[in-house]
Structure formats: C-alpha cells, structure tokens
Image (cartoon, rainbow, N blue to C red):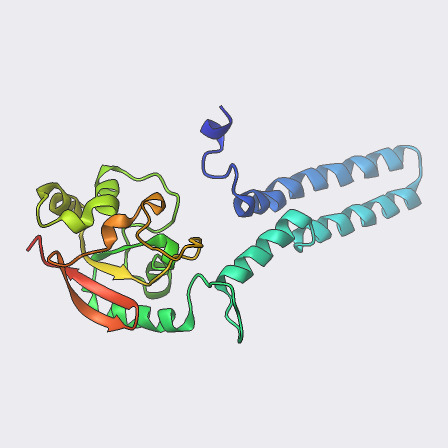
Length: 223
C-alpha cells in the first residue's frame, strides 16, 4: 500500500525533501494563526508576537535548506553536478562530456531520439541540448519497447523486434559516455544496471562521433 501511494517519492530523499516546503508552509501558517488567536484571547499580545517571530524563523530555517534532510539533498546534488580540481569522486557529467553533448546535438537530426544509459550522464542530452532521449532517468519503470532496447539493442541485427521497438521510440542513435556514476566496478555493461544492450554494437551500429571513451553511434541494422 505504501509503495502504491508514493511510488515515485518513497525512498528518494531528494523528492521527499522537496515536499517539506509544500506541506510545511500551510501547516506553519495555520500554526501561527492558531497561536495568535490563543494569545489574543488571553490578551498576551507580546507572547503572540514572540511566538509568531519564532514560527517565522523556524519556517525560514526549513525553507532555506538548513533542515537536515533538505541540506543533505542539496549536498548530494552538488556532489553529482560539481567539478573542481583534484576531485576524486565521479561526476554526473564532466566538462568534456558536456562539450561532447554539444557535438552530438549537431549530428542527431531534429526530432530523433537517442538511446542513452542514464547512469552515465547521457540523459542530460535532453536537458542541456533539447535532444530527446529514450531513457531520461535511471530506475524508471520501462515499457516493453524500452525494456527490449535496454537489454537487447546489440541483437538488433538478428531480432526484428528490437528494430520495431526502435521505430516506435523514434530512436536511431546510441550515446555512450563511459563508466556509470553509481557503478564502483566501472563496468557500464553490467547486467544489473539494466542497459547491457547498449554495448558491443559491432555490426549493429556505426561510429559517427568520438572523443576518447565518449562515442555516438548510428544504428544501421534496422535500415
């Protein structure tokens, strides 16, 4: 029942933290109003002012991100998106990868979607360059076409169903940016990540753009 009601938010600290201001503001306003009414009844206006001030300070404290859950979510987002000299932790997207996404946007025809591994930052092609992607977020529930592409894209040359799925998704390109951010073993083709079909594309796709480990392929098996 719990997961049925809050499927997309349960267990995600960032989403849960984002709900605090939305739910907290109305409750805080009602609380302040109640305090003022009580204080007015007992003619303790000074206490009402003090209580109101404390409530406003507490509300601003939460809204400004000082509440631990909110602050932690800000730190987590900053860690994923930040780049700085000597950084040893992986970024969601490095400066080199961001520049490569700009090159990719110049190659992919308008309106055509790109198959990406959302764990390696490729999904940001949509946000940064307005190029649609097949997998915009990790850990999403996949429909039949997306699930087939994620796991079996490399079999497009022998499995017509894969080409049919690509056609349904308007996808003809594959973007690979290297090791996923959440994979400590650095293997983007690990089955448990769910996107092993995007790797080993020999005979299925041709390389059209490359910069080191960063690569853009055009699917040729379905032509």
